[in-house]
Image (tube, rainbow, N blue to C red):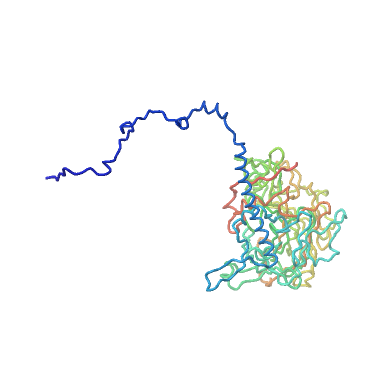
Length: 578
């Protein structure tokens, strides 16, 4: 049976509970009270009484004024604390902070110890520039250049005063020295972060099938020279499974120049009768980094500023075999195709909003950008005679790789020492090259003397004399391939020095070549007209910094070109006056 409880007393909650409706409480609820008008909203009455109101009253202004005074007082206090802390720091007086954990109180110096410092420093600290070769600091507001302790200025302190100016080889005008490195300091190293202007790479230069690994240890200074040493390795397991190790030095994104004259005084490695070594000093546009394949895909070796078929893959119209000159009489090693290039990635055809470093013309179109290459020299031994190839690489290509080498555009002052290179290009590059006799005793295996190489407006100098000159007319429009003219490179160019080893460049005489072999560079100097100095890797007319920062993965050495060819993100430069 269920248990039933009866006669229990009401609980307190039941005894004192009230109905949900106040009308059931036994009270008169509709009796007017004197203060009802304060609680009953009446919009029409309120608008008639206060006319909308205003915060600009004496009381309101007083309240805001008090808040403003409190805020300014807090800022003033923080400023005083900041000034005091900086004064004490600069005068070696520590700000004390009490540490209570030890057995007796100990005072330690404390810097920037108040919470307002990050906020103030954010608005008061001037971000230092890294533009050009100046690195941190650059030129200050009064036009002064920072005096870096030691010998780290743009012009080496060891450069003789007599080399501060040089006459232009073409017009005889005086040009001024804008950069020099004499390499006199003993034991310099070029690992990342070691040097403000140079960095030795750590990679395999797979693009030209090199047999060596470029290691930073292969580039150093000694006896007053930069030394790039190629050596055989006993255990390839300790050298990335390669049997040779060498050095490549680059000024990429550290020092660049646009136009001018670059000179290098060099003693070539090896012997002038033994083939195999590939020493070179050359320049490249800062948008691409030598050895970093993804950064060069679609940029090297272009120098082009038109929107036409020259920017397209293979230099052909999509889905066609035209122009005819682009599909016949080309590279015999590549089915006679003229070009296997993927197309110019940063072309003048770039659509608004697509990734492009700029600049932008006033009509909204982009300036065509790329990473062109100019070789000051590449040394080679042919028929037991030492020579240097002095060249520039271009894209898009002329029909049959034949540039307009008329007497007006190809100038060779001394045909007994220099002649046009028979190699004119292939599916991946067109070259304008002159082969010039070297000073046959200036090799490591001979007297080891030095000879001077340079280029200016693509005039190449060998052993202190003009070797040959390429005029802009040699790169004019080609109606057969339907391309427009290609300009002499206008990009900010950085410097590369390396000692390579590859069967791609003239073959290798393994029986007679000797290791180690060392290319010695006495000095490198850059000159420009006094009225047209343009140094720095991010010039206003041809910016590179924003693009490099946005497409940073292009500059990872282990990413092949074919794996990455599109930069995700938007980069745009300023206006360019056409």
